[in-house]
Length: 124
Image (cartoon, rainbow, N blue to C red; front, side, top):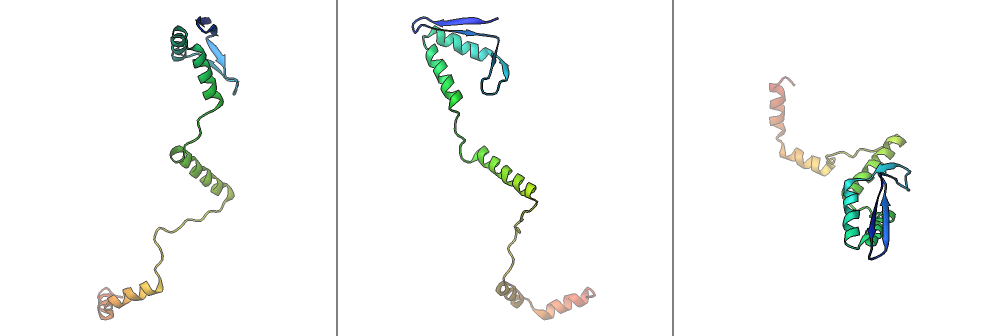
């Protein structure tokens, strides 16, 4: 059953049905008690026009996606999906490869006689 709420000061009335259709999607929804409470409050306080216009503004101008957080996660998921669909992707190694200079510096620290002794002790 529908109810009519009136803002007499601003000469605005709204009839609220039990269900409504989302004009963007065509889906049908029940009117929640929270919506009814807000309509009653604004009708009683002569601000029903402000409620309707605010709701329309937010409906027609959704909030922009904030950078970081969920937007960043969604972008990463889109990148992963693109990689999987294309069938090619490059995984970077976690440890960087040692340069020749780093390898020779490490070899200088070893005593080759000790290395040979250890290898002989273990049968190598």
